[in-house]
Image 1 (spheres, rainbow, N blue to C red):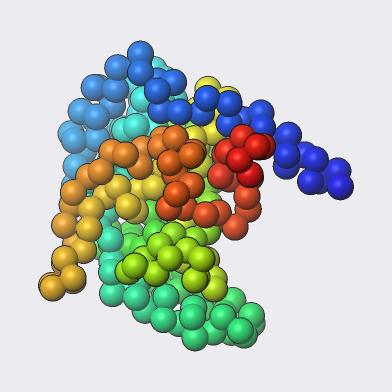
Image 2: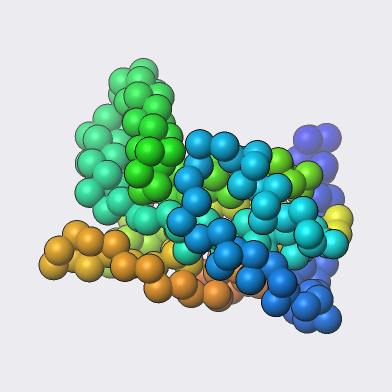
Length: 227
C-alpha cells in the first residue's frame, strides 16, 4: 500500500506542466549547431564525444538537446534486427527462462553493432540516450513498454515491444523517443533513411500516451486523474 501511494504521489507531482513549452525561452541554437558540427563521430570514446557536445552549453536542456539530436542524426535504425528480435520474443513469450536467455544474448549483439556500425533497435537508442545523458550529469531512464507497429495495435501485443526514455530537466521528468524521431526504414529496400521528426522531443505526456504504453504506469507522466 505504501509503495502504491509513493507511485501515485510521484505521478502527480512530477508531471505538473511537464511540457516542452517549459523551455520556449531557452535558445537551443548553439546546442543544435554542436550536434551538427560533430556529425559522423564514432562511439568508441563516448565520454569525449559527450564532452564535445555539451561542455560549451550552460543548461541541462541545451546539453540534452545536443545529445538527443546527435543520436537521432547519427544512429540508424536496424529494421531486420528488430524483426529478428520481435520474432524470437513472440516465439519464446511463454518460456520465461528461454526468453531471458535470448534477451541477454540479443542485448550483447545490439551493443556491439551499435558501437561498430552505429545501427540499432529501440533498445540501443534508449540505452545510448541514457548513457550519454548521464555522462553529462543529466538523470535519464529507459522506459520499456508497448508501441504500435506494422498496424498492430497496442492492445493486441502480448509482450513489450518498444523502449524510449524519460529525462529529468529542472526537477521535472519529460518523455522522448529517439527511435521514432530519427527516421524510417524503406520497406522496399530495408534501408534506413534519416528523417528527423521533432515531435518526439519532450512530447506532452497526453500526446505521448496515444502511441506509447509503459509497463510501469508511473512513466506515462500523466496526472492522477488520467492514470
